[in-house]
Amino acid sequence: MRIVLVGPPGAGKGTQAAFLAKNLSIPHISTGDLFRANISKQTELGKLAKSYMDAGNLVPDEVTIGMAKDRMAQPDAENGFLLDGFPRNVSQAEALDVALKADDVKLDAVLDLEVPEDEVVKRIAGRRICRKDSSHVFHVTYSQPKQEGVCDVCGGQLYQREDDSEDTVRKRLEVYHTQTEPIIDYYRTQGLVVTISALGKVDEVTKRAMDALKGDK
Ligand code: AMP
Image 1 (cartoon, rainbow, N blue to C red):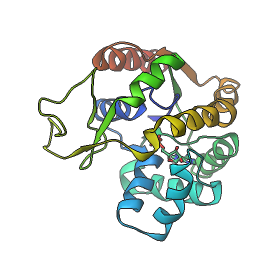
Image 2: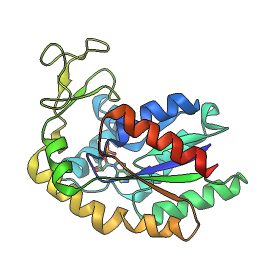
Image 3: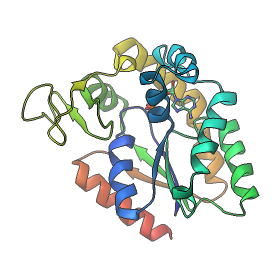
Image 4: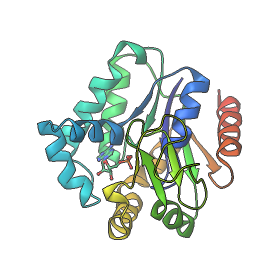
């Protein structure tokens, strides 16, 4: 299957993407993770992306689209993928359509994770991520690790993403509403959008998502 995951920052896209990708045996492709990997390796791409990410803005399309297409061209993505955080505006969605058409393949679904804005702010403010694997996500109140600051899954160090600070979150939400939300209408005209509530326990949301995707096949 070829799936796009959309939703505001804090909707749980990264967490859900990791479970869904595993259940569906397809790679989880997160442009945010690709940028963060470049930042920790201190590549030129990482240096450029960091300035935009720290301000809560989108990294320019010229850079992002090429990086996403390179990742999608890897052999493990030949028969499907779960895109998390890409596309994030209409021109990226159009570029993705062109790339898929060139390969004579189509998206199967766009899974839209819905969550109220006050919940988003609470989730992000307390979010802590594992340095070793960013799909290991904890929360200082809702999903505490057994030992403070240490990942339950792999023992990695937990940290707060720089762009999870309150000001940057506000900016990221604004960017989501103005630039990313329009892609939902774009895909709606193609009949691809499945909307589910992202409220509740992680496994409940995963089940809801799997049921919605099965109904959509
Ligand atoms: P995420 O991990 O998906 O929340 O992304 C973190 C940050 O990376 C975003 O706030 C953007 O600055 C940048 N980013 C991730 N994906 C994209 C994209 N498709 N287009 C532009 N910027 C992106």
